[in-house]
Image 1 (cartoon, rainbow, N blue to C red):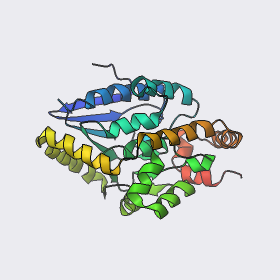
Image 2: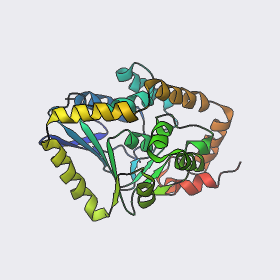
Image 3: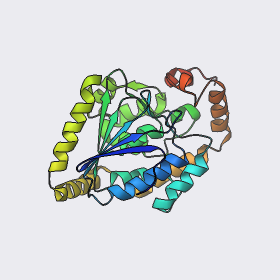
Length: 273
């Protein structure tokens, strides 16, 4: 068994509960990607875990976004599974696992954090706690982990453009209404609801999970080439002058600190042009 640094695993029969625990704020860095690579290899088998529930040990952050100071390092870790330095292709592999994946979101999932949950099979958010955002446009970038591919298919063109271009925060109720989440639930309801659903699914034949996911993915999942293209555009764009200036300005205003990122929609909206 892999020695996980950033994930806490709890097995309940055929259901694996995975708590993301990467202080100080669950940023995506090389350690988290290394652990996800190992976990995806486990979930690819479909047994003994038929369902995996992702949640967070941090009450404020599910997955913040990528650590912009470690882009090359986390991409190199992703390549160990995908053969390419791209978390987009790693996240797409998550969508293709034999295990059914559920995101139980009770904190902020922005940027690649949103893209991680979009590549899970289902998403449930806690009212008053869950916040979703694709904030890359605030830095002059396109989402590099499949965000545009998923949002257009799930929400439609207009709502996808609103989310992508505003780079703003969306609460659980609005995200549910748009189709970003399966459901929003009260804070005291979400954990028992997700657990009950996960155990119910796990009791169904594993062969059904595999064939249903294969067919749904064939219909709804964008091609590897499309994911690769978005990843390449992000990788190229993040090195350009506009993005680097915006990142520098954002860090000067607290970007990648817990205090400032509680309300990152406001932070990005107030950055100078």
